[in-house]
Amino acid sequence: MAVKLAKDGGTPVHTTGWPHWPQNPEALWDQAVGPALREVFLGAVEGLPGTRAKQFAANFARYIGTEYGVMMPHGTDSIMAALTGALDLDGFEDSGEAILPNYTFIATASAALDRRFTVTFVDIDPETFTISPSAVEEAITDRTRVIVPVHIGGHPAHMDAINEIAKRRGLKVVEDCAQAHGAEYMGRKVGSLGDAGAFSFQSSKNLTSGEGGMVTTNDADTRDRVVAFMDVGRRPGGARWEYPRIGWNYRPSEYLAALLDIRLAVLEEQTQRRNENANYLIKRFDEMPGITPPRLAPYTTLHGYHLFMMKYDSDEFGGRPRGEFLEALAAEGIACTSGYGQPLSREAGLQHLSAKYPGLIREMPCPNAEEVCAKSFWFYQNMLLGTRDDMNDIVEAIAKIQQAFRER
Image 1 (tube, rainbow, N blue to C red):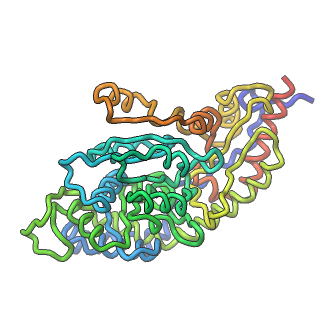
Image 2 (image 1 turned 90 degrees about the vertical axis):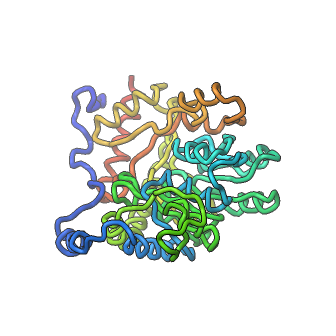
Image 3 (image 1 turned 45 degrees about the vertical axis):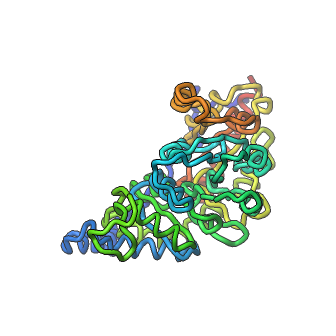
């Protein structure tokens, strides 16, 4: 009997929805969130001196395993601040060249461009989707000053290889950890592996306050420069009316700091649950031709799983294109996305800049990034907080679609 897909009038496989994100049980408001926000409100200290922001930064740094943390209002600001701190930038000079992966969110590039870097996009590893160390090596010029590995989707980049290149070539390393809260490289949290790390707490992130960010580092001078960037040029613990550096106002909200401190307490538990469900899905998809589940490098001791990133082979689905597959999957009740549609360097905004300012953007050959963009599809992190039945529905829906596509 022919399989009838939900998009053709059949019964959807999954009808119970997915865990909401963020997870906001009313009991948590009563027990923790409400009292914390009330304390900020009644204390009338919603900004300076930033007591709660400093407290959360210290707690987050302790969780990551660094000496210092500085809270920021956004993830993009955090990358800008991390670059400023690690390379002692003032924002007015030519900062040199930054090497970035060509498979990442645009903030990785826009933050570097804002700090007056020229950017060079390089290829990724075809299995982990993270920056390729060999591609980095090939791209280095006498202008190169920093490598920005992105722990894309929550999978750590190959930091030993990146750090070895950086040390040998006299470069800095700034980790983009926006999608990798809790991820571990050989037992160490990302954000503690380079000269500085930058995190985002935007609304989709595994630790969120709607917006927010963090810079982590083990270097006191880097921390001081990040604080100056964030707090109009001031130094940590300095007088309010003295400005040893030029800085800007990127001070965060005390309300967000209070909320993040509460949610940090359950991040590790949620990360473990995502990993358990992801590992189960990987085993199931390994038995299904046409679906390539995430491949974890041997150094990955814990994946962040902001995204569950896969590749789709149309040949195993009756030659049906990825777009038709995703449409069918959504109809079966499985939320999904095709992810980045093209390498970042091809996006219109960057193409415009490249044409207007020759030399600002350089693109190395990126065949792996092109293939991943053409074949990838992602599940969202909140889905990995679901039940085993939810995971089985994902597998059943894809198997159902494969059977239907092959029959036609």
